[in-house]
Length: 379
Image 1 (tube, rainbow, N blue to C red):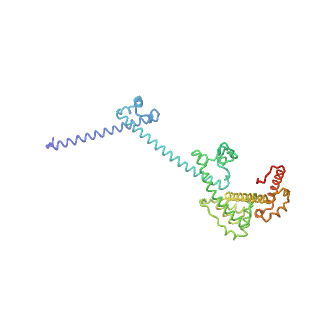
Image 2: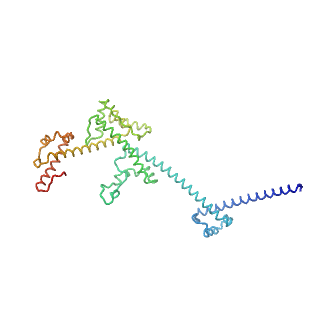
Image 3: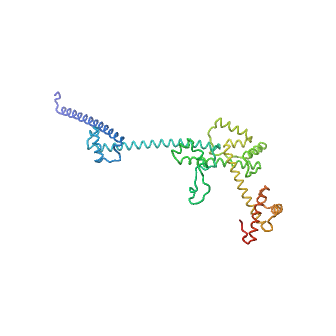
């Protein structure tokens, strides 16, 4: 009434009506949000009670279920708004499930990584220090696993495999429960790295044997050879300068524990080896060095087998007539003593062993020839 200007009065009235409308709108939206929140809570309770499924569309069946609940929180929602409310609830549940799965997968990967790391460190230490054998296959194996229908050799039982030795270890059981393939993968990776160390030792031992002019035999023992090498390099320290041992890039660079240093010191005093041998053991372990020595012995066996084969071929080419049967070794030796194959076998006992075996074969061939069922072919 105090406003005389009609335009001003109309403007004030309009502003007042706008404020009323805006406040009413805010109250309505707030009430709708509150009702929707309560309805969502009701749906969540039904979902957790497994009375509804998010895989079901908002059709008459689901709508009937909601009506039958007679939950005031759901009945308070207008029918036209229920489909959108249901869609929002389903989307929220699916997003929650996705996040939970993603978090569970992240947790599983963290646990798997921790289990892999722990198993890797433990298994590598056991193999490097000789507590577990590098020569054992990892898992049992049946003949049919390699080539079904064919005889592929001896069947590998669990007791003959590494699994038989570690199956009760908690680190193995934990990793195997998370991923059955993981233990084998970690083992293969460790063996690949340790093979480099073994090869490093093999090459070094070959150089040392060459310097010391020692020849490995099939029955050569690790400790005996180490002692001989140690004595040689103690008496001839300058000879060690010519040996350049490659350092494996895969060596363990972690600081050694005091107990480990003490153990290696005890081994050094026990074996009484020269510094170059102790350096090799410090770089690797006794077990790895021994594995390298075993490879050297295998190489020696292969070379000896080839030399014996060549020597037998020499006998086949020079002493093959029927009248040669029963020939004394000294007579045969005089006939072939200057041949390369003869000189390649420095051990007289090995020559005699091969000669006796060949003479037995020659005798059998003579008998076969006498009955007409032999021809001169290499057996």
